[in-house]
Length: 267
Image 1 (spheres, rainbow, N blue to C red):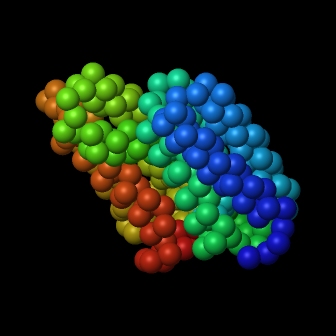
Image 2: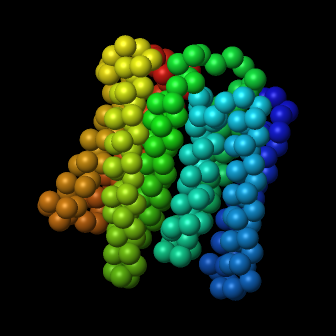
């Protein structure tokens, strides 16, 4: 791993998110407003440092930092942190908030240890396409909401035997809201913009590349979730399991090029 500014800032952001999770955990135990404020302040500072890491990476790379797995992970976690601060923080119970912050720490840690690349390396001409940036950024934003749904579904399943039905309903509703936002964004980014960029870069809208196929499977899983919820009015354990499996498949899809190679082997 090269000792560059993006590395230091990413490591600092990960550490701040972990510290915020620790304060959120303390607050869950002793219920002190000062701990909650300290935790939120740490998330805000972590997000600012995280933003700096993305900017530094872009400057060092000389391009929009969305062209390999490290940059994708950096952007995806940044979007999750933004969603946490801007849209979901007030709606998340403490266990979900802790899990989101722990997920940010783990994903940034994995990115730094296993995925970091030299930002000054040469980029393929196809990776400087406007449509690539639209494809990658919208796909990551959609997956951001899938991540929120994953965490709320996981907490739901851990508490499914609880007598507090109101809390379970709130978790179920949070999962639905997150997926209902993320699904159309993911559709536009991963499938529509991805097909347009593929035509531009490789001459075909669809090439049966492993990552293309897996992205379609992810889309089908979340389509099945929405069908079950909206048409069949199914809720609870079944839809929570679908949400968890959908995000695990999403993570597998993101990193599938490390296993299968293919046209997406660059990232």
